[in-house]
Image: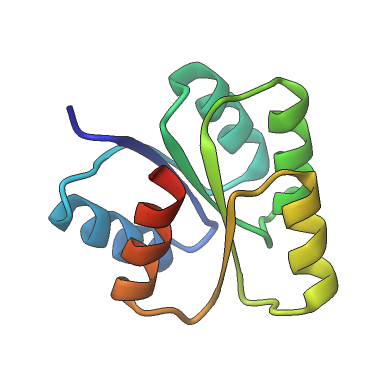
Length: 120
């Protein structure tokens, strides 16, 4: 069975790139969210194997979404994605419980390699 992924990014363009890359690699994209609130609802409802989580969302930070999901004991692996490559943001994301961190822009191969490492 294909591994299920929820994509969270406020940019339709980014969601489309991530989705197309994942589908081509055999993953099943079960949901997409453009806001933190919908990301939390979908994550808890769908319980996907993996969530790609952008940090800058219109209603809240990805870090805050991550905190809520971890408090709810979600089992999904989470790859934190951000254009902000600051060590402090990366460290906070990892300390809250992200499984990996990708800085934009990234290549399709970097995305796939990161996902494969996290899901091993």
